[in-house]
Amino acid sequence: MEQKMNLLAMKNAGEHDAGDSFAERAEFYYNKRPQLLALLQELYTAYTTLSDRYIQTIAKRHNHHHNRHSSVTSTLDSFDGVEDSGISQIESDAESSLSYQQVSVIIPAKNYPMVYNDAFVAEIVIKNVEYDILINEVSILEKQCGDSSTKIELQKSLLEVLESERLILLNENARLGYRVSSLMEENKGLVAESVFMKQKASEMARCMLKLRDDHRAYLLNQKIEDLQGQIHGLEKKNREYYEKLVKIDKTMVESMSKNKEHNGNEVTLEACFQIRKLKSKRHHSGVINNSGSDRKSNSGRKTYRWWAKVKSMDMFLCGHSTNPV
Image (cartoon, helix red, strand yellow):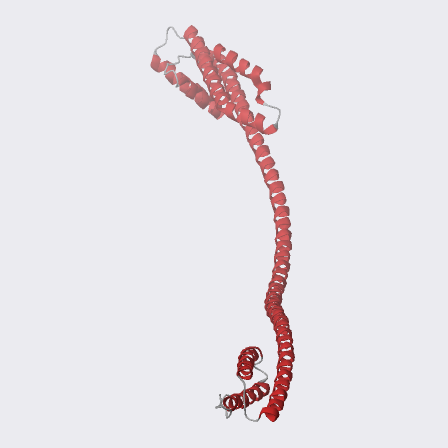
């Protein structure tokens, strides 16, 4: 018992290391409760044992000449008288305490007041121990109630905090829902704008293709104009050359007509060769005129008619001479 008391004292000395918070101290006392209850039970057993030994010692001093049956009968009679006087509970507790050791008690009839006082003292001690145990249990229950009330308050405060957080989250959810709806509307606007931009881009692409075609057409028109200018210049040169040839032909025809008048139908060899040269020149100019002036069909027809006349004239001029050789 002393060793256990010392051990409990050492544990009480280390009580300051349990912690400063209420929860830690409550946990420490809750863990130490079984040890306290066991110690109180041992104290109760020790008190009952001491009371039994005290009663046995008193009984042994005065019961050397009586047998066990008479002592038991006298003890029962004395305890019946005590029950009649209103202390039957004390006697039952004393008998229960004596039942632990199973030792017979021999009390003489003349020592009833002493036995009564000793039993009363033992009962008082037992009641005090029970009272201490009950007080300890009540204090433990009060601590448990206090811990429960503290836990309830903490849970209430936690519930309030969670409720406030729930309201905050609901507001946040509503705000996010409004933001999502606004973003969806903005997304729809951006989609419509992207479709419009795609249409504009397609129109711009068509415009670019059209501008490219127009640029190509412009370049082709410039080339055509340059070629037309070159063709016009060639036609002009050809016309000038043709006019020169016509003038030469006229002069030659005039000279030939003059020679006819002087010589009749005689044609000299030199005149034939000059006519052949003139024919070759005309043929060459006619080829140039046909390749360079497709649009001047009328002038080509005139040239062809003129060449036909010249050919017929050449054949006539290069005929047989009437003069003798």
